[in-house]
Image 1 (tube, helix red, strand yellow):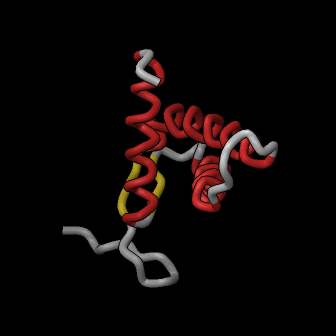
Image 2: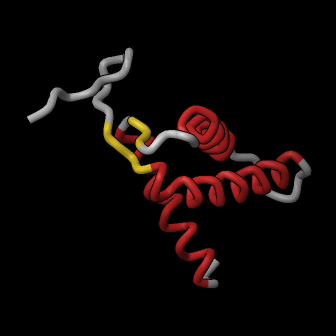
Length: 95
């Protein structure tokens, strides 16, 4: 079995396929950006977590869009899984 990858903080890293789900992450990132703009315009209630997610997705896209696999923390992986579910729902008309 291979060595466990860890980041500089010692957190375990998990593989996430950007080749398979990069377009899902991009769709969720764009939706998140629109939501944040609505918050800044006063249309939605402010939520700092939404801005954190937007920034995390933007950083991931900037650093890994041309890569096949992104190595992410458990918390990031959970967020990315939600992005995949969101994209699937959005494309199927459930959103």
